[in-house]
Length: 502
Image (cartoon, rainbow, N blue to C red; front, top):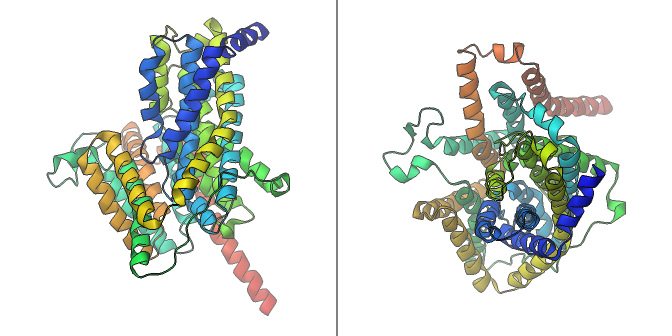
């Protein structure tokens, strides 16, 4: 092990590899901060440049883009209420309200702390537990995945902002949007009304940008027309939280969210979106400051940010140990390794341990570089936000539309973004929380696919899912407890109030 680690150090700490790591991380943060671009676009753009590089330099470049882009989404999520990447969708719930209160630097500081901690946690998981955790991931079939996603969807009730009916209605709308397009099993078109471009469904980025960003722009335009004063987000970089603010509950939240993100990342095909919503929902359930969620609570920022960056290391576990991509990004990473003559799989740890350790070191350094580059990008965004609203709002709209169009080069996505912006404004006026809609949209396809697969696997006898799969039974019980516990807690409070009045 020591020889492999020494060899990895020699591979990573060369001028070429370090230059690629720095450039990749900075590019990743910028790409992540621009709404609609994301990790896949950043890595794909860099892929052709890796052909003439050494293995260490190519790996460093792509891992830097990967880690930086997942973090970068929080910058626009906090400052302009639109997630730069879907991985930062949950960060808008508390990040933007905190920025509106005048604490944008602190919100970005909490997000940076969560991202760095989660990323470093997943690196440790990657290097120490890859073979063992990959074998656990292989135990997850459709029944186990079904119960895991069901557990994640319980977040709809916890992020309903006090109005369960509106929250569930918003979540059902999200589930309906997720069902538009081709059937996940048969390929038949659903709810397309004969309009072929809808066969691929609604693009997630278009919906996110529309519901969060464009609705905010439309709302501000309405306020400006009515000549009311708006709160301009002021930001001068980022400010890391002090040690006194990191009490025991927040340390535990960081550890728990990082563990959730790492575990979700290990499951092939699950992705960051499921991890951040599951982590956010669990944070809201267990935080001693749960009543402040949605109003600018730091716990609501560090939980999803720790989870989404923890996915980066976790997703590499099945990729390296089994040759199975954890998500679309690691699929590109696998292609790069194969191009460079490295064959991922069960023999990689035995045949090329120095490659695995070099990836661990590169990902660790990329997560540390997030701090200075996050400060620089936040500073750059702060200058943009100081512009007059008559200039700022068109710029934000243009960036949103360009980012949305750039994902699939589709005019349908542009119209989807605009229509969703109007729908998001409608939701604002009627005080419908947008978070459940996003949860339904993100988790809906995964839930439907695992449900249909389980139904076929069990030949319609769904009760066998729990009786024959102990992991699925455990996850289902946890999900039910997550739903019941908040109601029991409110009932207990009412009983205590009645007793005190009596």
